[in-house]
Amino acid sequence: TSALDPELIGEVLGVMKDLAKSGMTMVVVSHELGFARSVCDEIIFIEKGVIVEQGSPDVLFGNPRHQRTREFLSKINELYGETGKK
Image (cartoon, rainbow, N blue to C red; front, side, top):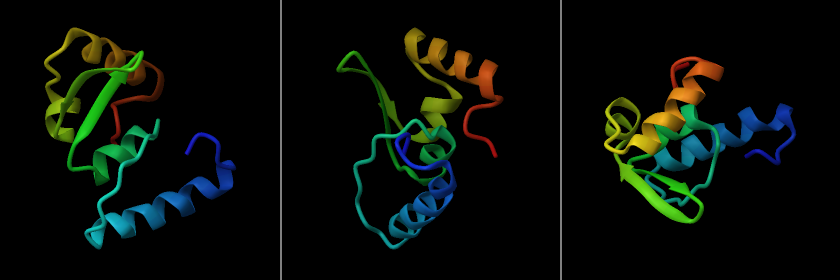
């Protein structure tokens, strides 16, 4: 989604949400954390090609197990507010 025209992001995410609600399985790579939190059943946090942590959005965003995940989310929260909450 980062390569999309800013005016199209909402439309594309809306279509993807509809697909997810219809039961379609998708593998998505995105920096849109709010979208990921609201749509995904499972989230994988990867750094330098290595899986650091994976789990449900509630666990990964609410109570991450790994220090690196906590550091990343803390920085995102500092920049943009509480992760994924809109």
